[in-house]
Image 1 (cartoon, helix red, strand yellow):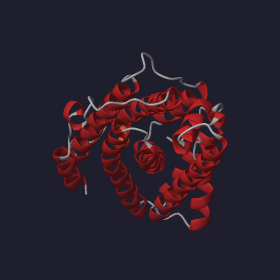
Image 2 (tube, helix red, strand yellow):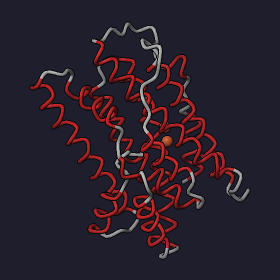
Image 3 (cartoon, protein in one colour):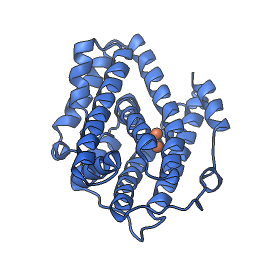
Image 4 (tube, protein in one colour):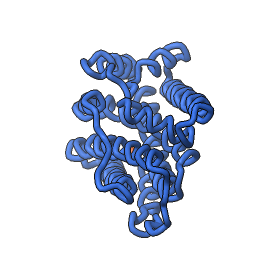
Length: 266
Ligand SMILES: [Fe+2]
Ligand SMILES: [Fe+2]
C-alpha cells in the first residue's frame, strides 16, 4: 500500500504557481469576498496542523519502513502547498487574513500533541482529513470564483491520498492488534473532553460557510444556505461513520464516535 501510494503521490505533485491561474479576474461583492478570506484563513490554520503531525513522526519511524517515510514526507510537502494556495487566495484581493479563534487553536493543539503515531494518524487522517474531504468538496461546488474552486479541488486530490493511507494503515493495524480499537476510541473521547474543544467551529467560519452556500445575505438565500450547510454536516458524519466501520467499529459505536469528533472539523 505505502509504495503504491508513494509512487502515486510523487507523480501527482503540482506547482502552486502554475496549477492555478492567479490572473483570473476575481471581482466579488465585498461580503462574499470576506467569506472566502475567512474560510481560506481557517483552512491555512488547519493545513499547518496537518503538516506538523506527520512531520513530528518522520524521525521516529523505523528505517525499514522506507516507503512510509517517503509517503509522509510527500504528505508534509502537500500540506505546505495547501497552506500556500489558500494563503494566496485569501490575499488575492484582501490585504489581511481573516480571524482565528482560541477554541479552534486549542482543538488543533490536542491533535498536534498526540504522541502515538497510530492515534495521531487516526485523529488526523481518518477523522480530520476525512471530514475535510467533504468540506473541500462543498467548496468546489459553492466557490464563488474559479480560483477558490481550483485551490479547493487541488487540495482535495491530495487529501484523498492522505485519508486512504490513514484508513488502510489503521484497518491493517486493528486487524493484527484487536486492542487498538479501544485505544482509538479512548483517543476520541480524550480529545472531546479536553477543555476548550467544545468551543467548536469559529462563528466567523460558520457564517462564512453559510454565506458561500447561500450566495448572499437575503433571507431566501440564507434559508437554502442553511439547508446546504446541514447537508454538509450530514455528509461529514456519514463519511466518518463509514471510515470508522472500515476500521472494524460496529455501526452504533461508529455513530457514537463520529458524534464526538471535534466540531472544528479537523
Ligand atoms: Fe491539506
Ligand atoms: Fe492532508
